[in-house]
Length: 324
Ligand code: NCD
Image (cartoon, rainbow, N blue to C red; front, top):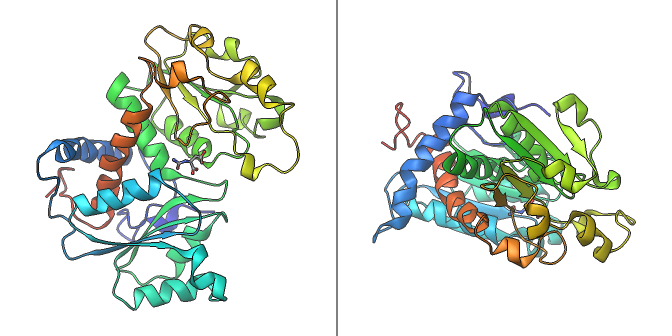
């Protein structure tokens, strides 16, 4: 799948579908805009007028709490009108095709679709068929990509660690089924991260990680040795066909992040998780709620990053990268 569809003929970002094809400069530009939006969320009146008069449709064919809510809040803080559609429950279940659903929403003069679907490529398919003034953001397509999550994860890393050039980052758990990991690895590579490691049982390691320049570990303590950032992934049981792990207890013993295993990382390492977490399965509560956890700041940062992406693709931020 190509990322070219997301740029217009002048090379401006038109849709946000994948991390592929984004330059390091564009990613940092989005971070800089997001940084300026952090304060909006801390104000008494949490609104800027950048998307006033625009209509944003949250088109979610797969359930979500955090992602849908943070997109909704982001759009509202930009002063857009927001419609939330949980589509599996309506039109498509009555036999309407995906593109017919989108065409009907377009006929209502909507401006931006935020799309989540359990099939890889859905956001691309919609982007190929909408008129030029309509924008698409991929909020997760199957096991393929989740680019806004990768942006909020790397933005969180930048806020805590500054630059990426000297960082060692370990991504732990169900890499096989994770669109979050796929997009995050791309973003970390583009940002020049010194070392990206993946830690998982062989049955949950994706193939082809060597070609991405990634070191793979099956021993968690070995993989965590000296890292600056740990990203824990949810065991995606709904995507697993057949048994990938011997037992949940065994998985927790070997790959669950406990304080004891965390001690293998650098003392100032941060712990991240995209959510939703399975406490006691991939992460122990003492770590999830502990001093090194930045799991809730990730959620807060997700709003500023989604505001930045929406305003950038809708032309609402100025050349300098600051909100107009
Ligand atoms: C992720 C997703 O839906 O891909 N969660 C999220 O967007 N916050 C990860 C997951 O479901 O485990």
